[in-house]
Amino acid sequence: MGRKNYLFCGSHDAAQRAGLLYSLLVTCKLNNVNPYNWLKDVLSQDINEMPINRIKTLLPYNWKGQ
Image (cartoon, rainbow, N blue to C red; front, side, top):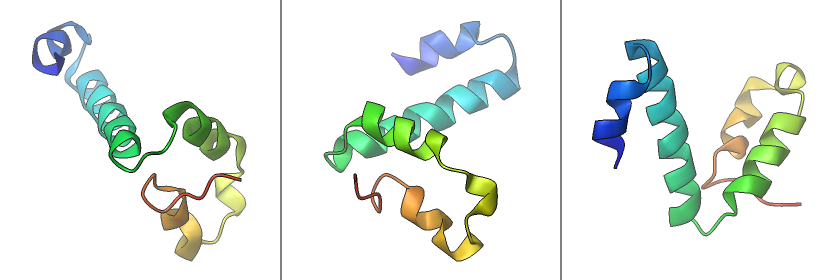
């Protein structure tokens, strides 16, 4: 489904961002994480205040839903 739809992203950068988002959502699916809850939780956190050594805890395969 993705390859044909990437033709309509508008630019190469937009297609790369779409691919990044799709890969994170598929990672959620593979790790039995609800993508909506994961994305809502990650976007609600102040990532600028998070220590760099804890950034990996936000990835879908490390994320623990609260």
